[in-house]
Length: 240
View (cartoon, rainbow, N blue to C red):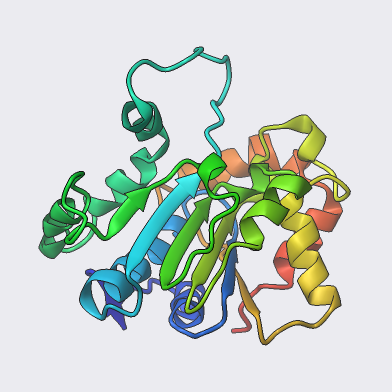
C-alpha cells in the first residue's frame, strides 16, 4: 500500500492509511512529533485528490500560532502571511516520489480548472460547506471548543476531515485541560457516544525522525500532558 511514494513504516501507519481511505467523515491521528501523522495524511490526500479523484480538492490548514516570542505581524498579502504556517506541507513534498514535483502545478494561483490543493487560513473555514473535499487540520490540539465546533460542522457530501494532533505540544496554557481543549472534547465525546460509524482514531507512537526527537519529547513535553489526554490518545493504539 503506497500513496505518492509513501509506504507504511509500521502497523500504526498502515492502520492510519486504511482509516484515511474509508468513507467515514472524520479521521483522528494523534501521537508525538515525528511519528508521521502529517506525512501519511498528506500522501493519502494527494493520492485521493489528484490520482483517483475521489475528492475535488485538498485543503491544508492549521492555527497560525507562533512558537516562543511573537514576531509580530508578518509582511505581505494573505498568501505570503500564510506560507510560514504551511511549511510542513511543503517540506513533506521533498520526501515523496519524484512525481510529487508535479504537484506544484496544482498549487498555482489563477488556474482554477487545474488547481487541486489549497492552503486556507483556519479562520476562513467558518460558515462553509465543504463538499467532495479532503481537509487536513494540522496541530489541532491548539484549538478551543468554539473553534473546533466551527470546524467540525463543515463537512458536506463526500468529505474527509483529518484531525492531526499531539497533546504533549499544546502551546496555549489554557488549553492544557480537558474542559477547554477542543480536540479532547470532540474526540472524547465521539468515543462516549460510540459514534464509530463516523470516525476512526489511530495513535501513532513510533518516531520516524532522528532518534533524539523521542528523547526530547520525553524530557521536555510529556510532563506537561494531563493524564486524561494520555488516556484518550491510548484509545487509538494499534493492537500488535
